[in-house]
Every structure is written in C-alpha cells, then in structure tokens.
Image 1: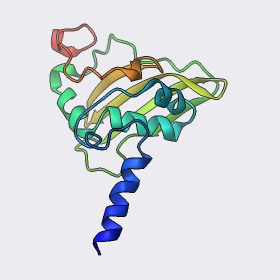
Image 2 (image 1 turned 30 degrees about the vertical axis):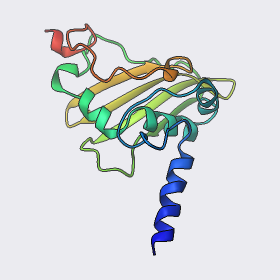
Image 3 (image 1 turned 60 degrees about the vertical axis):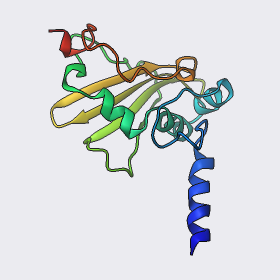
Image 4 (image 1 turned 90 degrees about the vertical axis):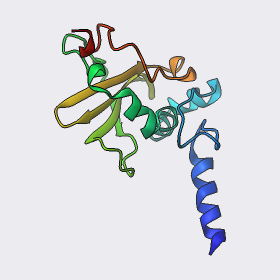
Amino acid sequence: MRFPTIVSVLSVGVAMIGCRSDTASSSSQGTSAADAKEAFESPAKLTQVLECRWPVSAITEFCIPERRLNVDFQNLVTYTDVVWQEDLHAKTQSGFDEIWWHANTEGGRATKYSLNAKRGDDYWLLEIGNEQTVQDEPDITPDPSQPRFVGRR
C-alpha cells in the first residue's frame, strides 16, 4: 500500500514546472528562465508555476486587511482578443472564496498576468507580472502603506 502513495507524491512533484520538490508546498519561489518561458505558453503551465510561486501559505500571509486593493489602483487591463484565466489552488481548502489569475496574450503566449484573491467582500491584487518578473521571488510582505493598498489611509 505504500508504493502507490510514493508514486502519487512523486507524480505531483514532477508535474510542477519549476518547483523544487523540497519547497513546493510551503514556501514561495521564483522560477528558472527556461521554466518561465515554457509556463507562458499555456494556461495550465502558467497555473502550475503560479501555484509554486504562491503557495496557499504565502497568499494567506500576503492577504491581511491592510493590503486589500485600494479602489483607486487599477488592476491589469485585459486588452487582447484572447484572455487566459484560471483558478489557483482550486482543489485546496484555502480559506478564500476564490484565488485566480488572468493574462493578456499575444501570439498564443501570455504576456502579462494578474494574480488575485477574494474572501467575502475583501479583494487583494497579489501581483501583476510577466515572464521576467516570475523568475524573481514574489514579494509576500510588501509595505501596506504603498498607495496600491488600503492600509495607507
């Protein structure tokens, strides 16, 4: 009975593009340039990279009341004919009503994405990024006094 469990765990680790198996479930990270390039080729691959980049624990740490989105700050404007959108951590109990991303595309590839979370009436814009920025570690604890957050008021 132990063998199927080990195979399942290994399958999940291998399926995560760019995730290091020792950190995939608990800490956020950037991804390699090669994995970032591949991730921006399909919605499913971008979802995998963003789930690795933003585990539920990191999203929970970011999403404090002071970091809710300031209504005067604009989210990513979708200006392309084809917009990709998918849920993040859809099969995980996260404590959020919704965690999702959407992206503009060009030539069948994502160009820029926005990562968002919602709980009740509270809404957070975690980041707007692209193929280059996804290679850096995300800023999980930005200063809530930044103009993009309500905490500055």
